[in-house]
Image (cartoon, helix red, strand yellow):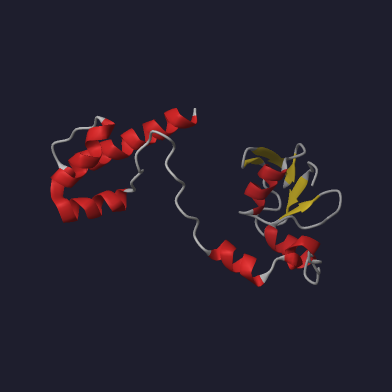
Length: 156
């Protein structure tokens, strides 16, 4: 939709004069053409119509205009096999670690290690990363930060 001038049709606002949503109105009509963004912002609060066409401008009007529209299926959408579709639904395996980079742990994995092996288990993971910490939360935070920095260096 191109920029357009609008008229407020909301009862009680039809003769509004002033600034509304960053747009200057005189007697309910915008002084200048407004962008789609401005129109959406204003139409979200009051009813407005396009001055040139008289068409109501808001999401509900757009939806009602498109009632009965039939969308044609895309050719490539119907060519997928049931097996391929099932494969798409499965979560992707974790990406292998880059050469020279130890396994990357998630926050939940580190918490599970801390539950099972305590801070000593976390320190075993932290040592190759040159990470230290005096408490489990601090150590987990430092491990996650170091892993992130290591992955970024390998990717760069």
